[in-house]
Image 1 (cartoon, rainbow, N blue to C red):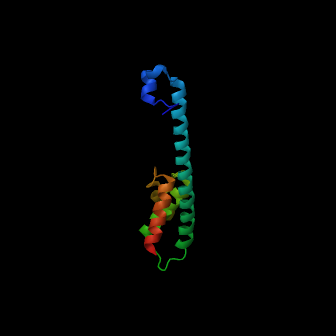
Image 2: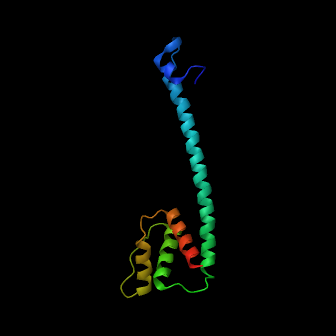
Length: 130
């Protein structure tokens, strides 16, 4: 309802009232902008709490009761790097540097994963190891 006349009546021109399309669009745009701002605020709050959980999981990874197997360690490394730095960059290490090559390959295997998703997966893996 706008000035006592609903949108349908205004568009039809009933009661001699012709709502300016630009005005109606601005009203709709204002609501859309407000909804977008709320969505971004909510996303930022989730990301901030996820960052805190990620940082806490990093600290907890140093105090696990048992050392994880090598495949799990590579997965954790890949998720940590993706969560903190994004996609793998630089050249793939040479064949003679087995450890660096395995780490780089693990990191590259999660290429394209959103940083937030990688952080959440890292937290989940650490929680599963506790």
